[in-house]
Image 1 (cartoon, one colour):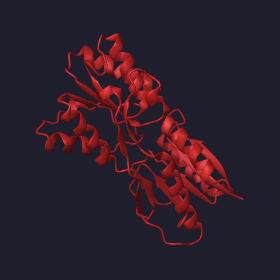
Image 2 (image 1 turned 135 degrees about the horizontal axis):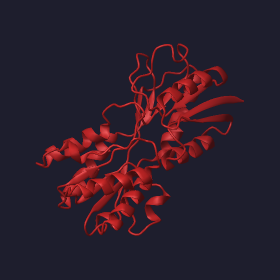
Image 3 (image 1 turned 180 degrees about the vertical axis):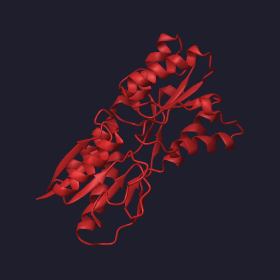
Length: 270
């Protein structure tokens, strides 16, 4: 029975946890070894080195800006998921077009009349500009709305997504900023944002419309339900498993596999 390594940024993120669960089902004839980096780049590197010694292949949701040469043995079976660190090797990647997904989310809010859209793109261990920010910028430009860097808030990854998001929102509103929409990196982050807005006396969607990424079960647990980008994590897991198995068999695999997303409209953007 093969051992497969899975490196994820944090098990505290619902998308990553559900992804690991889906991948376990896809690899039912293998043993899955899951490593939680705790959003730490050096920890990820150590896990990659360790897993390459005990596993036949690795699936990595990376927080690195670059996969350094020598980090893994040459031609080691590796599939990157979701994020794309720079690498000199030809490593297959499976994920969403985050730039296009963010463009759709931003454009939808702008079509609702929103003009002060706060973006909270999420935390990545090593900084590199998120494709979500690029999609956000492009949507603003195409809708004759000026980009303001102060409307992009990045978390530090030191606390839960709910806590950090709530704290950022509280501080932002206290500065007197005008906001009529928020896009969060996850459904749990959206709950943190709504909690903060409630304390400040604002309502969703009456005062502030909201869209989140992931479309996990959390998106429909609260009131109002949250409009969300469905990233189709189960299909990402299936494709990553298929590609890794083809690498084991020496087959040629595509370097990029883009999984479509969909915008699931709910009460938070009425």
